[in-house]
Image (tube, rainbow, N blue to C red):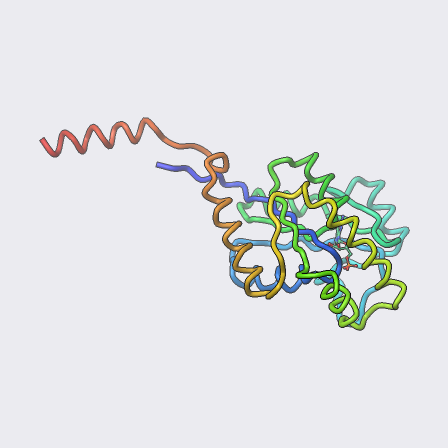
Length: 215
Ligand code: 5GP
């Protein structure tokens, strides 16, 4: 009766640095088999625990700018003095193959996506408090105090953009946050404007046949 749309959904997840986006997304990927996480390119330094091609594609500033010129990004932004960008071609491939795609990107990039792909769903992750956010940023132990300060200050600007998002999820506990996002993703799949077609003629036929068989 219902023909589901073959093309996957695109989800953008944003939130201030240190709010736990990455841990939430890793847990989501374990739970939802049809979900693919886009790997971004960045010109920032690789952190100790990060792997090229898994966490990011780490590029030099020149390499990144060459890709901008070649129009290889769906969107890109400068964040804390470094470039970050979403590779375009691979996203289209996954969406066309019917997979749902997650972009974990900051707000400027999210706003660009909203303009070019308005059917995208936007989810914002909040820390339970600013004190807790600071604690988490410091707890990573991977950045200098000035970088931490910069990211912490940026959080205000980011949280101010929350009205551009469709959903907000507080990350008090990873499992709670994941549960809420799973519920959001499931309800998105049930939205009437996300289905390809509803075969009303078929419904009429079925009603008719059922009535004939009953009489
Ligand atoms: P981090 O340096 O902590 O890994 O990321 C810094 C910020 O850049 C985070 O808010 C993250 O979501 C964002 N980011 C990561 N990849 C992309 C991307 O491809 N595009 C944009 N616009 N932001 C990104």
